[in-house]
Image 1 (tube, helix red, strand yellow):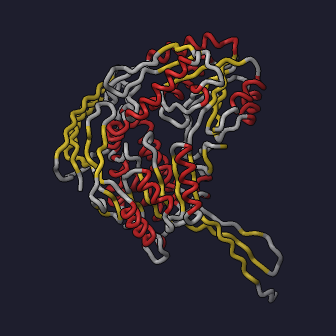
Image 2 (cartoon, helix red, strand yellow):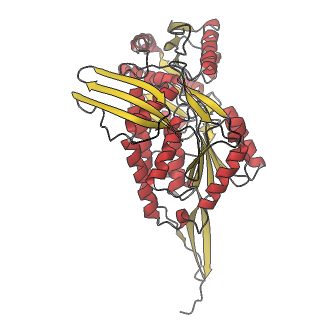
Length: 537
């Protein structure tokens, strides 16, 4: 059921880093998994490891087994850095969704091992899965980089680290989900208990395939639900590898099912299925609206949506300007700008505007665009041609509407999907690049004069996902944070995400919350139980 990816990794870290990978595909069985690797943890490290026969799983994962899709159709997954096909993946359709839902529903029955399992044992399974992901961390980071084009060091240190921490955080919650007792009159006793929602569908985006998988699966399993994961068709590889680890960890059959496929078929079938009790989706606002409509027309299933953003950063004159430049550029260009949290609107106080632009341009020009598997690379390709073309069109619209192109704005070459880190200054609020989610490496810098003005402009968007404030005045930071219409506000930092902290948006950036204790409420039903007392005393 698997293809084999043979990796030759030669890793060295002194004052400079080098990573050489030799990749080849062959039809060989899985013989072993890589041993744990602590990577890049000291100033001087030299490791040489050869991982042979590490598998790529191209099939559907249902009931702890690998399956050919019902119609036998496949689709290619392609390395966006090279345009080379990695392998063909089985494509799930409605019949496969039906099969997975049947398995998930059976696994969630009260008499099934998963529901009868001691809650602490459930936590141990999540910890075991985290252990296995840690063991396979280099391999998973390599798969993520090949599938998405993001730099390997970002995959390893951000995506894999966040995935492991999310699993461990929710592993700790399994025996801490408590009900409450309510004071009523002496004739009754009332209390609540939390029960699993049931079968939970999760539709995963292509920009953070493994991390978003964990954001949805970990709290769902912590609460005792069963799940069906539909990874994005562009990036299914790490999700399918986790399927193998789910079985190895000892999860009962049917608890986790993974269906690679396309939104209009597999995704729509999940959203409309009468036996799916909840759907969690991360992606565009337009698709989120369709999912919510479909869910409402079916069985009024619960829906959690984490959607788009047009996120404002406000830089005051008293801020540490170099820190503000560093953090806003990290927000604009991380993952090639393909983030719902991208810092796409940067409002800078007039007195420091020119200096901020100068420093931002210098910083953008210092980014290294190249092979994502090279540790010197900080900027990779866009995910596919459709996304590439959309970004280039928006860059052209910015130039035509009068924004000043300070740097970038072009493709790196004529054949690939690489776009130079791009900085616009003199951006006005009416421009397309100021209003539309670009989802690419484009930073738009605005100027402002006073506080009331910038608050109004920052909030003048249909989105409300994240925002940031840069100032040394904490009174001002707190008042501005309260005034901003966003689910998350960062002060003197950006993209500071933690498993313990809730994440989600206002307005058309979605509803519900992921991460933290707040996510648990999205995956449980609250049952009130009231008992009539005899009052014999």
